[in-house]
View 1 (cartoon, rainbow, N blue to C red):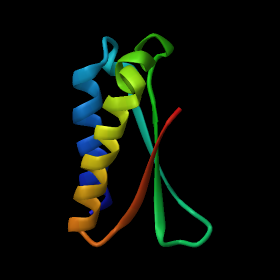
View 2: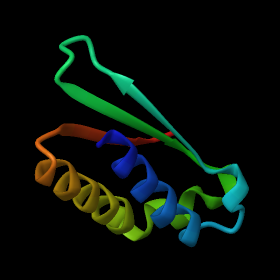
View 3: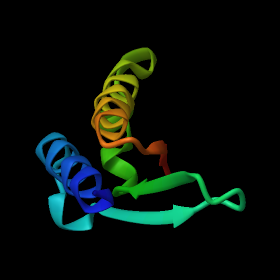
Length: 81
């Protein structure tokens, strides 16, 4: 199920950036074990495209990922690095 969310993040973010080959999504378990952290890294030039004005795009990406996780009974967090 985690692969579904990872693929979802790849698809969304690769469509937004100018350098889709530089997009990386890493999955980590937190210390408590019930929260999955997804760290998304992009080129520094593409960071503004992913964040958007006043963070609107990144908020939308996080909302979509959380909705997919809730549907699959998972707790996740998405971090753009």
